[in-house]
Image (tube, rainbow, N blue to C red; front, top):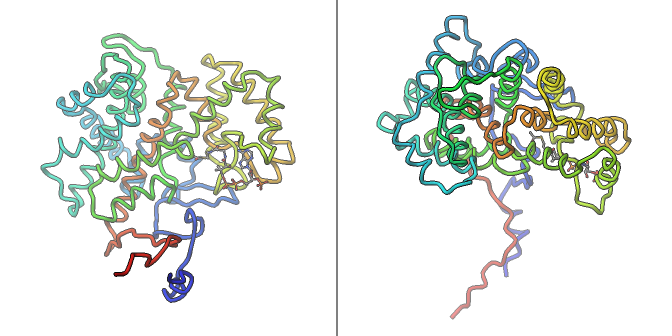
Length: 397
Ligand code: ACO
């Protein structure tokens, strides 16, 4: 039997970095994070400025085109998004084919992949005009596929995009509306969802973005890369976290049970964790959480929110911000703690929370695909491994 340690000594420089916590996989000019200072910037612009002063479509434009749009460019981009928001009628058969109650993330991932079959004839991934067209097409069509997937999973009639509505308002309309019926959407509801999209638009080399880049490194087209990214985002440790926050708050149920669960979160023999607290990178505060906290307060003034859930959430937040266990470990509320509560208030069903994340993250994923494409040479992503199994035990005759 070969001594494995000798083999790895002979391989030259070889690092073992579980979860790639300290290995940069690329050079990037898209998103900057300073976890200690609680800073997040897209293409040099601070996230607070983008969330408060700009719309999600401005941010999508910024990520894709490397600069914020002028007024004319903004008008053109909005129009381009509207024109591309419809999906090929043939795709409707796809929604019909899924079983009732199919998870919207499964339909979304299949739907994005299927776009390549309906819009394939011009795919030339080496031509910037072509891949920018694909980029716009995907950003524009994802909300439609997302809303169709949700409604078809419930057997509800699908609602086509309304060209008189803006990007985020149109998505809420397609999700919650009724065909040919007026739907009253408050500006604060649209602003809250638009902000959630903006705050999710990119977050450097997280698991799903890394997946998108890995797929892109094989020269696959953006439909394939984004579809894979959706799969990576589906897990509860990533896009599924805000859904877990709401499920946990519902499980706790009332303020008088909060202490019991805080005690469990601190008990090292208990696997229970407070969902929506802590972050791998932000060790001071999550700047996205601070922005959403303000939005939640504004929302609460205008629309009815499940007050029991909010009471439980407030109590947990209060304890966590003053308790030594959480302070010493730098466990602050993260974006999911507030986004879960906001999406719940917007009457968005829990199984759609990760889908909302996808809509927000899509411009980021595509801009990462483009950045990789624009490098002079593309190196295929191909990590090594530390092999621990047997070697050379084949019977010798
Ligand atoms: N509740 C209780 N204790 C916690 C929590 C929590 N939510 N998070 C971390 N800790 C404790 C750990 O037990 C550990 O304690 P110890 O030092 O006594 O052993 C210490 O804090 C450090 O925890 P790690 O798991 O090493 O921190 P890491 O940076 O690897 O994990 C993570 C970050 C995964 C986000 C973690 O804090 C967590 O599980 N949080 C809850 C889930 C969650 O909210 N996820 C969403 C993240 S944001 C996003 O994905 C967009």
